[in-house]
Length: 319
Length: 260
Ligand SMILES: Cc1cc2nc3c(=O)[nH]c(=O)nc-3n(C[C@H](O)[C@H](O)[C@H](O)COP(=O)(O)OP(=O)(O)OC[C@H]3O[C@@H](n4cnc5c(N)ncnc54)[C@H](O)[C@@H]3O)c2cc1C
Ligand SMILES: Nc1ncnc2c1ncn2[C@@H]1O[C@H](COP(=O)(O)O)[C@@H](O)[C@H]1O
Image 1: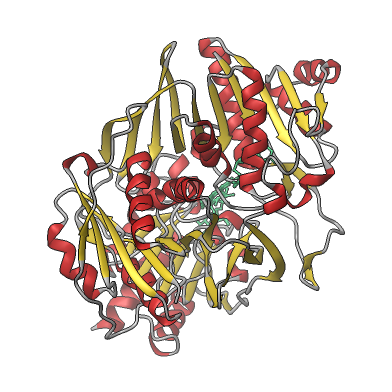
Image 2: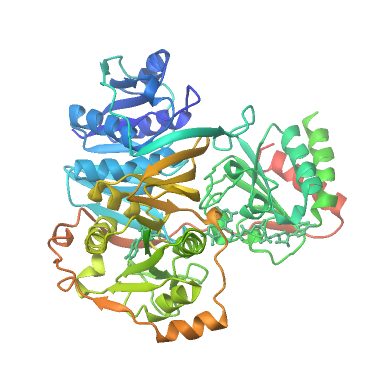
């Protein structure tokens, strides 16, 4: 039986839903599951980790692990993978996962695949599917060894209801800190805002909104709907939106039930981050904008006119 | 400071692409410098201008890379190395990283700057693996590079919780993302000078290695098939009176798509 080790996605002390998604998939392919949790003061997460679908929990809990550092994090994962004798090591889609996976693969002498969307196990043979070339094509990748380290693309797997695991805790000794790459500071992103990767509705604003007033206008719509508020790169470059709000190939990958692209042209790098959404609404004044090629509903119009009406109409329908 | 910048020639992602019988149809494709590597080149040239540095680029594979390398020369890179070998056709990130390791070891570099990912693979592995093989520190997804002293740089990286500021001891590898800078357009003078510059071309043997040694004989994974990606279809597009069509769409979102 294959053994799958999932790296728990913990942000600000909270276990993200993606951990259960990966563990559910691991169980669905008939694997034995374990999870490795890395951080500081994470003991209280152990029941959640088991409930998410793991049968063994490797815990690396140390004050030195409070801030992400790829070297020590990789050491913890390698330690757990060796103890568990994992065939597959899966990271959730995150910047820390993307930074750590290739290190772990190099250290375990394993194959490495990022952004996988599916996995097929047949006997000892591992195959994965992943997008490439800015999502223009998909690749089927055959793994020639018995070990694969992978980053799973956001939204690729679903959590199964009623899945559970058993509590069986193994404590890892804290890794040495990386003396050659020392974290000096973390400038935290604004907290309290809805995380784009969790939101059921995401509304993104693009260059069509022009300036801060336009951004604020669209933000009000997001507030009404308690939606995640994202952006194209143009508005991040323009200084109107924070880096962590960028949706796209170099930003967040989102797959909400409703995605609204407001004043966004639909460049391929933006599409790479949002075409997994269930339903897409686009508002753009240019009827030829490429965003309309992927939108289920398209409103051709001036966003400064359309957004206030959208707010009114949604309020009406929700009452 | 000696900087090595890695540059890959990749398929132009802006053009249409078709898949037939498990392979990408080559007809009509064009090849360009990987966008993130253009950011890496710009970052290197800025370090040269602001702090004084010697800049070298290396590109592995890709066939005739002359135009791409000349473009980087025109942007301000001083030396160019092209490693070409027919054996490299199936190479993956790990093999490229091992080839780059050989190049690095010949050159006494202080800093390697790679792109965050190559647009053809979208892997984001090569730079990080190179650092592992070299046993030097690495920070990925970097948006600012500052030189602190002869032995150190300070970088800012976009992480999950915010911007992480990391001090790195040299030699080191950093991978850069597109927010780090706006690559300059080569100027006429640079383009003219670039034409006269040499490109150091060699195969694996000349580099002092072999396909086996860089792991090519035992590829850990290989792409066995390309498939067309699921494309979304254009849905309903509404034009006309803003109030009317917006009300109509809200109604559809609520009652047809059931997402409101
Ligand atoms: C390596 C690389 C990585 C990248 N990564 C990303 C990424 O992760 N995410 C990302 O988003 N981009 C990314 N980009 C940039 C991308 O190519 C586009 O430049 C960017 O997405 C454009 O943003 P935009 O759609 O807001 O702006 P534009 O392309 O300028 O589009 C603005 C749109 O607004 C419309 N408009 C104007 N006024 C109005 C109005 N009053 N009402 C309604 N509509 C209006 C226009 O018709 C137009 O379609 C990347 C690029 C590169 C090279
Ligand atoms: N064949 C190559 N030649 C030069 N640089 C490369 C090559 N392959 C990868 N790189 C560098 O490594 C980065 C990441 O590539 P990848 O791991 O394929 O996503 C690229 O942006 C390049 O800077």
